[in-house]
Picture 1 (cartoon, rainbow, N blue to C red):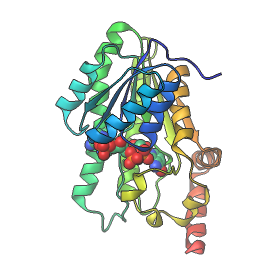
Picture 2: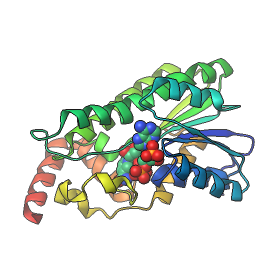
Picture 3: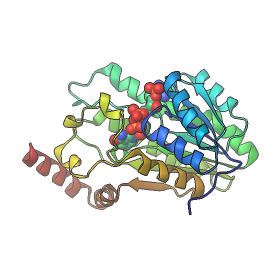
Length: 260
Ligand SMILES: NC(=O)c1ccc[n+]([C@@H]2O[C@H](COP(=O)([O-])OP(=O)(O)OC[C@H]3O[C@@H](n4cnc5c(N)ncnc54)[C@H](OP(=O)(O)O)[C@@H]3O)[C@@H](O)[C@H]2O)c1
């Protein structure tokens, strides 16, 4: 039986498509009120209508997470703030020798600093109330560095360092911090990120549906468990990488070269 979010308000960034949209629908099914954020108003309105059809009270706030004022306005617009899901993000994959500096900065501004801005806007409210949960959507690319994806990996590693530190700062003060690390997920993400630039071996684990990640996000918001890695194959490989990093990288390089 999935946990209920009746009487809870959930703010989700990057809710206009993919994992964020699926998370909005999952929270709506579990009874939450929603505040949805992203830059594309029309897509956000469509997702909001889908959530309302499931019985949720849902508002949208057009937000660019690279702008501090937008993040503050988003958080202030929530009548109550029980859960913040920092999900907005994108990737441009390239070898470091050829990656465009503007793109590297832009990824960091969105994926990492976007999360920082929303978190800093939300924390004082949550701490003052002594309750609230922040769920950060990182990636398996935040646990293992992948050739051809260095700039993106850096943003997701940064998210994990920030999330770990924040968890230790707020523990015992009523605020919980959790993290979901998806493997490859079938979303609009790959309209920009080029799947063929990923190391071949990383593509051996089949892509999951955004609904699977959305359930993990809602479960993390419910139980506050620190880290979820999905799917199972990715979780197992990440555990292997953490225990035997050199072997995991050697495997990734050798098998990727063999698959080329
Ligand atoms: N797909 C994967 O394989 C995968 C794997 C691991 C982790 N992730 C992470 O999961 C998260 C969601 O990605 P997704 O797969 O669902 O991709 P997606 O379908 O492209 O969704 C990305 C969302 O982020 C929003 N966004 C991008 N830049 C933004 C900005 N500056 N301000 C506000 N919103 C912004 C987009 O909305 P607008 O364009 O309307 O602003 C969109 O709603 C990302 O953080 C991604 O890194 C994805």
